[in-house]
Image (cartoon, rainbow, N blue to C red; front, side, top):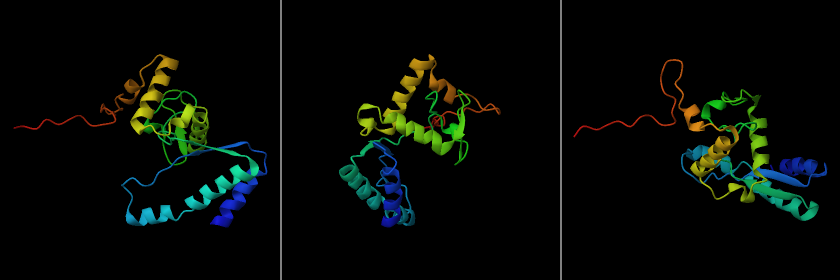
Length: 170
């Protein structure tokens, strides 16, 4: 793993790159099965981190980390965030502007865009990042993005992020 990571990152360094922008992924939170946690922890994160640090020292390449929240759900063109934008693992289609891209290309553009933000929103929660993206969208397009996310589906059901609260009879 270490050899392959080193080979790939050395190829990048040979292309006169000044900065590499990466998501600061954190797999410590719950929700992963024991088997999946073991796979992720052995996937070479230490090798990548060590090689990026080495490139910073030897080649002077800056490594910038950004918050990964909503990078795959936000449109890189209009900033609209919706879980339904990501139509599949490979396809992204914005429900606001109609932009179509490969999902990884769209996410990479969002990650690059966040590199210019002071601190890359690293310490922010997912909800705070979403609120900031919504504010930017509303300022740019003069439209409330939460109204778009709550639009009814063709069957007349609401597509709001959370289901309506149920009342409990006493």
